[in-house]
Length: 221
Image (cartoon, rainbow, N blue to C red; front, side):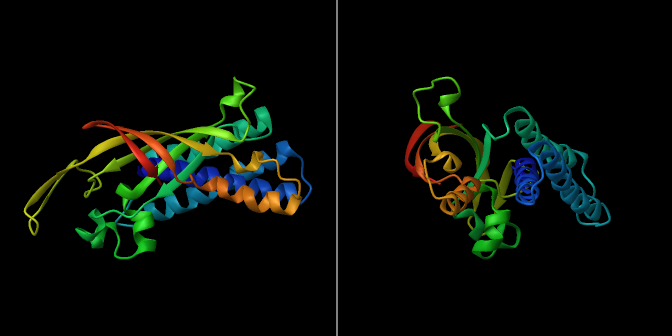
């Protein structure tokens, strides 16, 4: 989950910098290259600072995830001048944060960043890529999350207070989604505002597959 967070953040930072250069009048290719470079550079700065922290340390795997995020944005802009494969994020509160608030967060803003159990990272794409009769704003979304993850580098946690064992497991999801940048909105200012929702995966029914088997969620976020 941590590596997906790095990939997502680098990707979205690259998009933000790219959009800034486009507004300034720079062409797509230069904007994409500079945007991706700055997105990766921003993440690299944080990683270097972590390298001087005794509590964290520099991580080449984190750097690889950062590079993947920026390159995924850059390659699509150079190839299609748009993102056909969109990274998205969603979050829902879980009961696990209450068991270890010092690790998973003691309030909503902390848990949003620290509680992996409530986080889901998505890859959204429109079947319109192949099936042209499908509206290009209608998407499928593949998600990945975890459950009962109370220790970052371990799959098991024993809670002495509750007297319970927790074993983490991976969750894979399939859901519907919307590409807000493709909605047929005529007003330019409104289209730019609505496009910002592409950072998030909106609630939809989802098929979840995990160790216990497959289950259908009426609404998943």
